[in-house]
Length: 346
Image 1 (cartoon, rainbow, N blue to C red):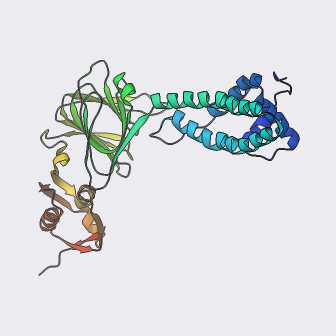
Image 2 (image 1 turned 60 degrees about the vertical axis):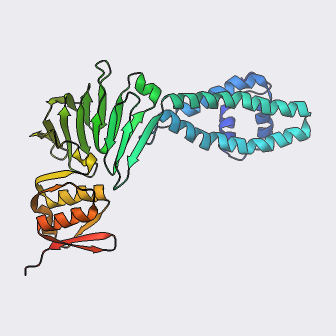
Image 3 (image 1 turned 180 degrees about the vertical axis):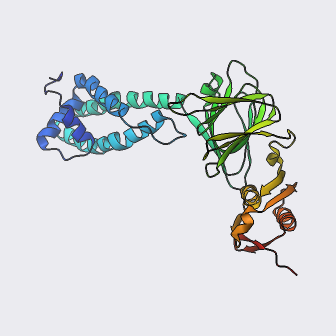
């Protein structure tokens, strides 16, 4: 039994909130729910239970925020739309004071609930930044850690309050260079799929584009720990120091150690690129991202051609001239696409 004149019928309330047709008798009962103070705690409890059962969705937003938005859209908006009918009916059949009580009670029930959930969502808010094709971004975290985001890359990081409380964890898709402020008690962590890179205070670069086969981590200074997380298995970790790096093959699930020139790590931030015996396909993929150019192949065999080349200019025209000369290929621009073909023999 409910606490008021009518037994509390949760199924009826659900029916009303989801917009299903109700009989006049059912509307009379619902009107009683919203015009009697003693029902307020029960209705609030139903709302809390309904909200807590919603699924979490969409990486980059907090589950609390996403669920609350869905809750408002699917539950409260139908209620608010139908409530006008109830209020109109009440005004016609009751004194104005009673009608006002309906509105006050609805605010009493739903506004604190809404405000409470918004506060939870705000406390767990994640920020998201995206660098478009041909764009590079420089971000400064609340602790003055600097992140350089490469083109077609996305990063998620906690709100300032969370971050400064010690949650120095970010998620990355794409490529970024990190210059991390030292904090032994609160390591800085970058999550890229199943690879987690943990750092105390150093400078390093991570390349982890979803459409590429490998994830690469290189250390410019200091030390990082790279951890491979597998559900149901023990984590595998590697410690890297200055001038060391690893390349993780996502298809083969294998590590490959590499030695790098620290002066070259993260040079893409300045528009500088160096390739040593690199397949032409990889070279043009990187140039395409950084210079916002679309490439296509007239001869697929050229993709495997290996070249050694250096780019030290942000000029597209200069980069294309150098690529055409060094790779001994023909570049032909048609519309927004640059076609790559073999250079004809004279």
